[in-house]
Length: 394
Length: 165
Image 1 (cartoon, each protein chain N blue to C red):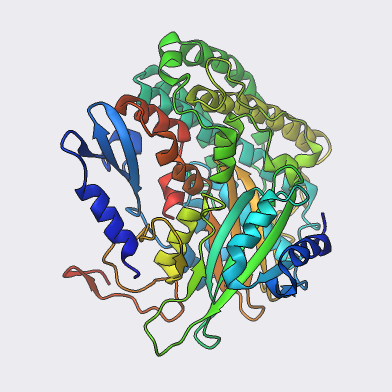
Image 2 (cartoon, chains in turn brown, purple):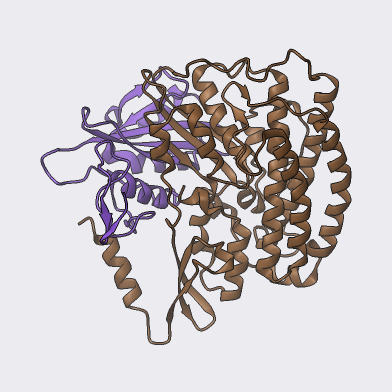
């Protein structure tokens, strides 16, 4: 009885017709970024069905989290979506703080620094998404340009935290360090450097007719399908829904900041196509720059660095939340990242942790939207989902 | 829409047996649903214009430990138009002597996203979902033995003759 699903799958693969073919795309195909195998049933150039196989990275995040204390797990959350480590640890830390009941006591300066570094990380993550999407489509220059600009952010975050990608910077109750002296000024320098670069990138890629032809009207994801499949982030907003957890839940310092939520409008084709998802990311970078500016402004004027400010002052000596279960969600560059905790109230370790990774749900819609497309278009669709296998199989 | 209203909607529709308990002590309140009715409850909560829980945020399987001999599935629903959240829980006991897996109803006919979440719960905790269209392991190889997130799981020594410990 329990092997029925496996039998059905084997039968399906065995029963392909004479003019159909079973093709493996990846794990080494560039559009699958190394760690995903797509099994395609194809009829010539047409994709009849896509069956994703993952688990190549599976590094047991949830099991680890049950073995370690809440603080010790923060470096592991960094590794889930390693292009947006700050956002991951922010979500984890918020969840633990709320369980401990200390979320209202976090100093404003700490909250603003968290939002600042998270938005920087969001820009860096979107730059990779856009750059590698260019590669998927066949353009190499945008990739180089995006990586060049991302490097500035990497350098700054390294300066703040001491490590390049896996920061372990945001801690329960505070931060590992305060920002280094001169960080705010350099943020402003970066913003004024980066704004014209975005204009150039738009000229190179967004308005490029070849790029538009390859992405507009391809992989259309209708809104009801997106919601039913649990898609979130730019996938959901690309289908035209203004839904952003930074606004809905209003966590951290976001309610005090001004920013818009870009959505897909079907400017080049239908609403929810690959181009819309791409454009949402480009527009989000602009909004993140706006948030950065506001954060830096407040950090420089009202929430200044003082010699006696200790970002670790609120760090609890012992982290034992009372017995409860709690689900926290936050808006990551790829969508809704959620952590479900069960605390038993006796130990410093969670009894059970389940992480709801945005890429996991976003990827599940792939076989739905790629029925009957061309193989070359499948590459465009896979790239537009912008999944991160590190959090798909965790 | 508050907790009591949701309870009333469910009780008027399905009768008072549908809710077997509730948890109102923590930060997020939860409804405990009878396991055989979870699909109908989700469908009602999704389609009722008063609740409209159209987004399944998360589905997690839970092993409550060998002492309790109980498995659970926790559903976190969200309503996009109303900006509300709701937690549903079902639990199933297992017979430790028999070789049967704890079994639960699949909600993948209501929320498509549950398809992969349920496969993961099956893969990691060995919770079987009835009426699931494609019940296979998702992260581990098809021939893997045991369910790693169970509390009594013992790490495998080798896989296909290769030492992995």
